[in-house]
Amino acid sequence: MIVPAYIKTDELNNKIAATILDPYYKYYHLSYAEAIKIETSFWQKVQLVSLNDKNEVCGYFKGEWARPENYINSITTVNFDKDNPGLFARDIINFFKYLLFELEVKKIKFDSVLDNPARIHYDKLVENLGGRVIGIEKYEHLINDKYHDSKLYEIINDRWECDNCKYTVKQKNGDIYRKCKKCKIGKMIYKNPFN
Ligand SMILES: [Zn+2]
Image 1 (cartoon, protein in one colour):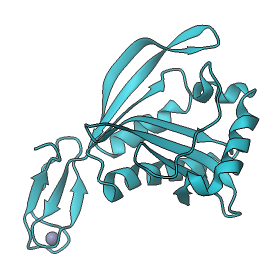
Image 2 (cartoon, rainbow, N blue to C red):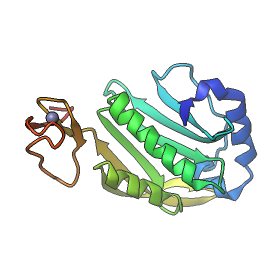
Image 3 (cartoon, protein in one colour):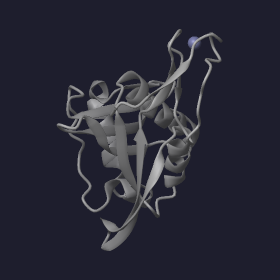
């Protein structure tokens, strides 16, 4: 389950502090481990935590807004429960779906350290959400005195919508949709939030 981070501020910062000396988390901390400043509104950053079934914080997700463009231009995620990657992987998807389908974010742009083993989650996620890889940026992040390349991604929130029942499908792979498969009478119309 994902909930706003500000209702779990102390627990979240304790979890972050506990990861600082663990090399597993170096791709999150980079070279300047710092406490999280948690906002009480989503105006500048969308900050959510993942909770397990005991109501404990097991993951953190942040998306930062570009202003005045009004899209998300940075994403940060961290999994505190290394032994239970399944729950985290599920909640990353929920986080992106919340941004795209609830907040109606027009575009999400972000990067991940190329050597980060967790990056494969982003590859799959971006493909499933109809995004694309922008490319590789050389020597972007400094981690413990070594520069690492980063992989850049973007997801445009374009979709097909039924003109009758409003059933929507995320645009991906250049696919074209004609008739609505839900109501079977509506016509699917392509919608791009930038047009
Ligand atoms: Zn329909």
